[in-house]
Length: 207
Image 1 (cartoon, rainbow, N blue to C red):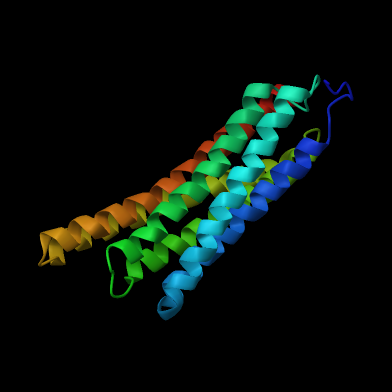
Image 2 (cartoon, rainbow, N blue to C red):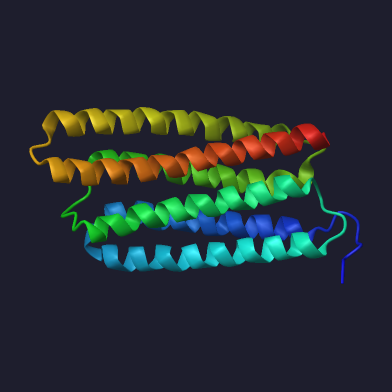
């Protein structure tokens, strides 16, 4: 049966739940790099959070199919949730490769990237929490500016990591492994910027 409640507020709870999953995944990834002897535990935690994110996305998409009037455009709700789920997927993929590739220890460049990613994910969660207040979007827009600044910082950090890798690597296979890990981490930051773009479109349509 279709819900006919105007602008169903349950979507906001789902956005906030997805934001919480996203932040916890970024925190676990950041902690993994800084407490590497416990890496198996953190990778397992991220794997569970990836499942949790999939569940939030599934429930959101189901609600889209069964709700008559949504808080904003359906395609924007779908895109927002899909991009948030993508961030967790990229974190999961990168973290697993540290185990799969038997990386002996993380680099300071990866630590820099995971720190930037965590800050961006916290901004994403803060921005999604402000979607309830579209009539007063100033604070929300400030979060979007921060996300874009952090994505740019992530690009710079990834380029520096790649340059250092190619300048110092003595083993081509190891260089390829690290390049993939750096790129996956930076792709998670790219998805954060995608989220900012979706939210910006929502603000413009609903202000």
